[in-house]
Image (tube, rainbow, N blue to C red):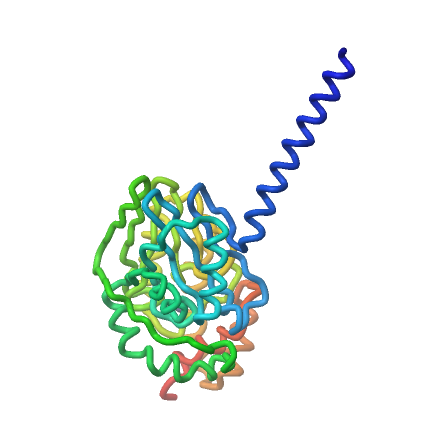
Length: 306
Ligand SMILES: [Zn+2]
């Protein structure tokens, strides 16, 4: 009697374990990681390259009334892979796409979502930036290392709706709040906060484990935006690039910006040779495994006009 009930208990444990493994497998299959209930994202992409959107993260919030998409990757091809992964999680309509900012690895997949009926939303400043620079970004995609095959079928789809301070999307059971982070990584960056889940998508205001792209933007304003991000006290932060992050990563990011700016200013007064700056900066910057090439890009703003 005892023996058989133990057998039953073991069988129950085994079948529960099986269910758990099936559930894990389902989320691994989609490529999107579950960040919280109703919130999924691509995170922690290794070996960033042009073909994998430079390791840019993107995600979704699935509410009662539909899906909100946050960023669309670097091409229509990448966006189509994203849509397939979304469809493994939900068949609800994709209501809108939010662009955290106008950089190519976050917006060039927009058109694939517009075709499904989604509306594109951004901060007014980056709507303006995208409209001004979109044509040349797409035309120069090769310069960023993208091939014809990578970009096949990719066309521009600009944000149709914009805001300047805050905006809220009501999905029935969940709110998706858009919060301006202007004058930081770009003129019109934004955060996407899901208060009911205490999750925030930080866009490229936060890079974790990646050297950040700092070739444009307002570095003083950027540190202010990082303070505002920390104030949200989110349980999970999805950065623009890298793994799910915490407030410690915000502190590290702030220190990185201050260190880079201070050292690059000091070094550029000694020499305007970008190789000298690169070698010296490498000695003091924290070791980040991804996107070392961005250090060279970031040096340009200090060597300009010299
Ligand atoms: Zn960016």
